[in-house]
Length: 229
Image 1 (cartoon, rainbow, N blue to C red):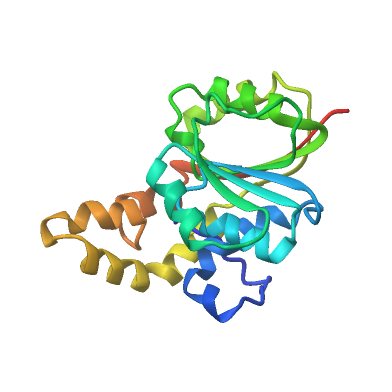
Image 2: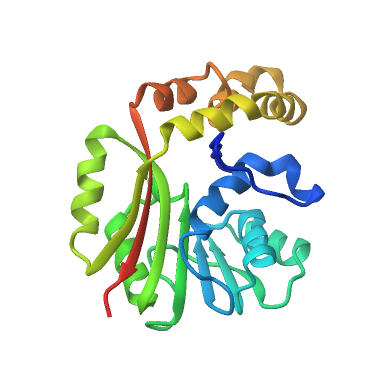
């Protein structure tokens, strides 16, 4: 689950099975459309339970798709629920990947990096594993103060940035449209005493997280990079 993306000027045809997750899927689609993925080797770092990577694998037809997450249970879930040739999930640390140098054509990281204690090590690993000429498709949020630290970290690497967008408006659109579903899930899955905390985690309309995105306290960005040859 991510906070989602919705642009009124862009409509994506989805399979019936994907409609329930439309807004979160649209964030993945927004990244994936930025480069050629068919027949490529792709990696998602911080893949969670794997739904986003499953959508990319079904829709954009990479040769292989590997999802890595710190939570071993997430990897087990992904492997048991998503049965696409070339798609697999593994437990791993974003800051110390067990992958060979220059082995991936495209790397995704979606709403995950703000949790990393050693962001620079994550960036080192992305750069090491990405092939020359490969693509790093990156979206997340930071406070305004932390954006300068993020950009300083990124500037150390030989990347060409070919897409850059602040998407707070599109994320708020998605959260507003998806709030009824998120509220229903919170009420179904968590005890009443935890509803406020869970609503904030889910970013429902009126929550503290929703307000921080709305006001720009959190800057939600998309960066798409190409590694120099």
